[in-house]
Structures are given as C-alpha cells and as structure tokens.
Length: 287
Image (cartoon, rainbow, N blue to C red; front, side, top):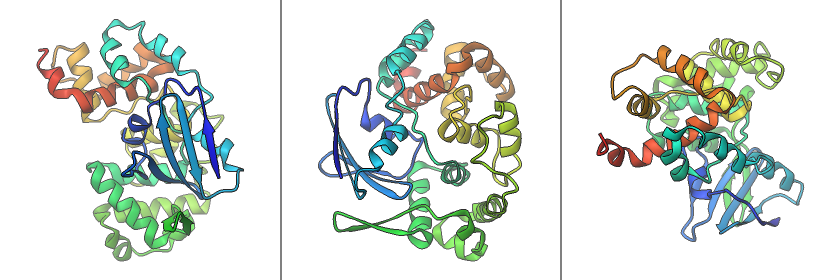
C-alpha cells in the first residue's frame, strides 16, 4: 500500500520518530523512517506538508496510521494555547511539529518498563531483541520485521531466557506484568472511563511501573493529556524555568504542573522534553 497525505501541518517526522515516545522507528539512508506498529510495517517520508506512507497492508491500515500519528488533532490550536504561557515560547517554537503518537497500551507498558534508568539506544536494542525472538514475523520490501509479542507469549518465558534480550533485571518485571495482563486481572484496554487518578492507581500495581512510567503509559497510549511524566530532562527544565535552578521534589513538580497546565499538560511536557533534551547546553548558557 502507498498513500500520500497532504496539508499535514504542523508535522515534523524526525521530531516525532526520534522524540523518545516510541522506540521502533528507524531512520533510513534516504531520510524515510521505517517502523513496526501493531501488525503493520510502515515506511514514512516527509516532503514539506506531504507525507508518503508505504506499508505491508492492503489499504485498510490508512485510517489506522492516521489515528496513530494523531493527524485528526488541531496542533495549531494546541500550540496557540501553549504560547499563552510566555515562558514556553522558546520550547514551543523549537518543538513545533511534534505530535503525541497513539500507541498500543501493552507494548507501551513493556517499552517504558524497559526504559527505566536506561538510554534510548539500549531501549531500542532490547525491544528489537524481544520482538525478533518472540514476535510474529512480517515481510516488507524483502526484509523481515517482527510484531511486538502478545502478553500470553511473554508470560510463558523464563527470566533466564528473557535476559538474553539484554533487558537485565527488568526481565522479572516484564514477565510478571505479562502474566497479570494476560490473565485479565488488569485490563489496560478498558481504561476509557477512568479518571487519571484511577488509571494511575491501577498501572502502579504492575511490577516495574512507577509514577513516571505510569504517566508515560497514560499519555502515549490512553490519551490522558493531563498526564505529565517527569524524568531528568523535564525536572531540569522545570527547575530552570520556574525555580531558578533550585532542586525541587518530584511531588512539588507534579502538583505544580497539574495546577499550571491542566488539560494540555501532556502536550507541554512533550514540547519541553524535546526542547530540553536537544538544547540543554544552550539553555544552560542563559543562566
């Protein structure tokens, strides 16, 4: 399947694919990105406001990828709302074109359990190792790709086996979480009517899921846009902008962002994260 989408603005493929919210997109020599999403392999390239999308599907996945890329949402309006906060202007201008992907809750849960205290390169490697070992193979343009394995599959793996994928101590968390989700004890696909507090409470019951990971799952796969994950990059930029570089507790930062940004908190977080991670040395010079 090949689809051309036009008038896609604001949209920056590189920022979205390399932004740290998803780990299965890889840059190709020609500037396109190839990634596995669900049971599909996609190849996406951007030329201005035009996206060219190829896949291993037969056409039914066009609506799927539009939803995944959040193309139905008005990001011009979201950016206008963020620009009402004068202190966010540099971050919004730098990160414009970023979008929050709509990912699968199960894959997102395991991906961000793996992400804890880890680097993006290692996260990507571990996820690919898990998929190539336990996932369903798919062909695209003469290459073999692998879907993310189902909970039932990882629930039946031993910790020693799973550690061969380089996930380290996280193996036991992955397996125990897979068992809980496979059993239906926690149905992460049925959180639609829950409040952010109720969602977080349920997610925190999963082994290896702390507050930041829970907020990532909520933001990236459950569309709780008031979730505000706080990692080292976000902590730094918040302390820089709002607290004159003073060390502030996570609890205080969480309460501060909830009160200040409300329903657009998740968008603010993503723009600040991308800005902080890519511009920190320049930001520090402004002290």
